[in-house]
Every structure is written in structure tokens, then in C-alpha cells.
Image 1 (cartoon, one colour):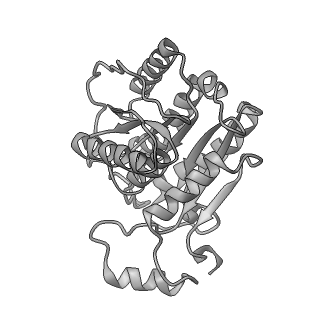
Image 2 (image 1 turned 120 degrees about the vertical axis):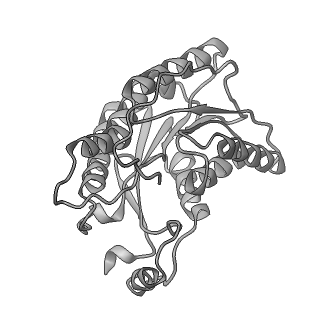
Amino acid sequence: MTPLATPLAMPSPAEPISLPEYPEGPRGTALVTGASRRVGRAIAVELARQGLGLALTFRTRKDECMETARLATDAAAAAGHAISTACLRLDLADVGATERFAREVERARAACGATLDAIVHNASAYEETPLDGIDPAIVEEFHRIEVVSPLVLTERLRGALASSKLEGGGAVVLFSDIHVIGRARPGFAAYGLAKCAVEGLARHLAVELAPRTRVHCVAPGVVMWPDHFPEETKAQILSRTPLGRAGTPEEAAKLVRFLILEATYSTGDTVRIDGGRSLR
């Protein structure tokens, strides 16, 4: 997850968006936001291994996103697939930029007659926002990143998703958080409210996009420790986790792969991946 800037970062100047060659693979194409590292990178590699070409987005980590593309291409080749990839900048806090991005993806897709088979809304923002003196602008920015831009991107590409040749049709995967499923976390109201809305968005999109596109929501616990996370806090979390360990980005990626390619009679649900921590 990417921390928000403090004070609130203003939207970056508009940049020309160019996708001269639409990425493809033998099983189609997936768009993965926030693919530069961590869970986003693992998802990209796992989907490439299944034969999906990749449109990968980044906000500031261009070089890391390009490394993800290289790793994904290598993983696909090792599995016997030839895929192409593209790395594109996308600032989800700027809804206008998201609309321009969607138009460019659709233009490139239509030009070559390809499909768009999956969108994985992995990109996120994470920042503590104490209730005392909370900044409404930051609350609104969280909603743009987590809810408004994913909604706009999915709606603008709904026709492309409906063209998917995957069994079960196209698929959309959104990410919530186990802390918003009955376990609110003090000090994270802006983030938590946005993630609550993500679950509602998944349910609404599941109805709106049926029957040609399925929509899934994933609620992780710790699938990779945040950078510089205190050891004492790690121990406290693991003491409440029945499986006794943190998850891995690869485990989260395998769940996303299952939802996109195999969960063909499931839509609108939220799936926890937390080692059982939500049980305690």
C-alpha cells in the first residue's frame, strides 16, 4: 500500500497516455493496478504464468513496474507462454486521469480486436488518520483512490470485459481489508471507510455487470508485513492468528488467480485471506 503524502498531495499534472501496442497473451489480457511491488507484483507474475498478457500500472515506481513486467514475462515463458506487457502511469487520486487512461486502454484494445479479461484493483493508499482534527480532504482522497477511480475504470471498460472469452466471462477483483469486516481499527477512519465502500462497490458491480462479468472482493489480513513494522506488534498479531504466521504475496496472488480463472459461479462475495485472524 502507498502512504498518502502529508500534507495532502495535489493531483499531478496531466500526462499524455500512450499504449501503442495492446498487451496480449494466449488466454487474454489482465489489467493490474499498483503492480510495482509486493502483492501487485505477485499477482502480475501469477497471471502471466497462466498465459495472460498484462497492462500494469504504477504511480511513481516506474522502474519497479518495469521489473515486474520482466519477471512476469520470464514466468510466462517458463510456463510455455509468450505474452506481451505494458507499464503505464496512473494516479487514481486524479479521477480525470483515470478516465483518460480507460479511454486509451479501450482505444488500443479495439484497434487490434483483442479482449480485456480481468481487472485487478490492487492499488491502494494507507495512512493513519487520527479522529481528532481529521482532514476531510484526505478522507475524500482515500475515496477517490479506493472507490471512485476503480468504479470509473471498471464502468468505462465494461464493454471490453464483456468481450472476454474466459470460461465464466470477464472478472474484476477488488481489495478490501479484514479490519472493516466487524473489526474497526482505531486511528484509520479514512482508510477504513473507503475499504468499507469497496465491499459495497463489489456487490453493486456484481449485479450491474452480470452475467458476462464476475466481481470478487478480497479482504486480506497481513499477507506481507509493512515496511519497518514493529516486532512487538507483529508478535501481537500472530498471537491472534490461528495459523500462526503472516501470509505471503504469492498466496494472495494464487487466490486472485483462482477467482479470475476458476471461480466461474461466484460473484459479489468477499473472501478473507488472513490465516483465521478474523475469528479471534
